[in-house]
View 1: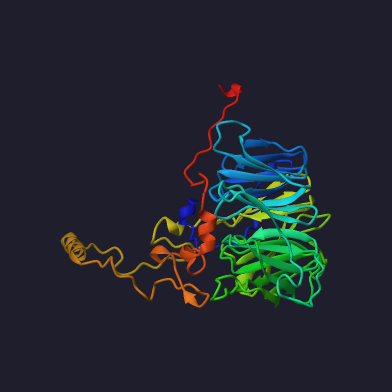
View 2: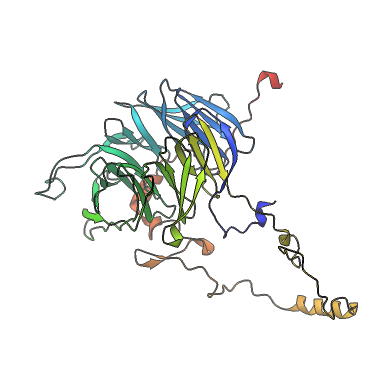
Length: 460
């Protein structure tokens, strides 16, 4: 059935497997448009699959060891892959060659555990090494640098008397705006850095302790954060506001304990979690269970106070990774055998959408004819009423305040995007110095590009 007839407000979670891709992958991630999916493999290859044709359309052959992470630029033109061979490679999918040309190659000092693009500029890259170090790498001509993000000693950040022990960094992510870098540690702390100044602006200890933080994910609005910890519990937090000094304009260092709004776990099997991902609207949370005998995905309804919703069973091949589609009720889950399962939410055909007077019923009912249903109406009277309706003035300039969308307050202000659209970021984003810094020297990833159609000799 035509997807345009499905109400976008009835967003649900996936319930069944739509298709399976034999991709030999260790993980898979949707691109921002949702049409392609990138797959990292243990043999050093990365592949790009077209979900419309269910076929691999690009082979990224540049690593000699296992690919550890893959990320997409804002408009999907560039793909980043990291590997245990100590390299991070940026690929240009607009290239006419196959495999695509390397746009950039970054050599690191150790095997790379993960890497990701800045949300606003694909020339800024965040890399986590297997040694527990995090580097912010800037490839722009006027800002070229490689800066380590580290936790300063107590006397450096103004917290004298506190323990100066540094824990290994285990996960690193940009927040959705790109202003901050969130880093999880082996000691259960979350460290927050300003991406522009590279300074640590906050240290958060998780209330009650959490063990090693293995994963982080943000809701699309950036206000909620979920962590995956070694104590087999997923925790959701409200991201705090980081105030700035009125004199210097620099964030004031915040040493604050974070109290989870929700805790998610498997109380029966006490299973750990391989991955966690929010739905596009942030109303659902998916957790991939580290079950050695089954492929299980747990779904929680965040809008209903985090109530457990359902369990998706993908068979006997254990789950290794999952990622939620950027705009639909769809999940890509990877099995330990390399298969990619694409989950979807089947929609029952609504025949009433084709005709306004058509009503669906579950069982046969006796039809009762109205007294005037088949009365012949004077055609002249119908024409007269139509002409009167056409002469009525229609107000297209005034917005009805009662029906105008109202969005939650951000930093004490109510904001909206253009034409009543949701806010695109924090208040004052257009004037924010951090945003201006990120937008400088942007590359040509502007959203207007096409992947070249390549044909084998056998197809000619």
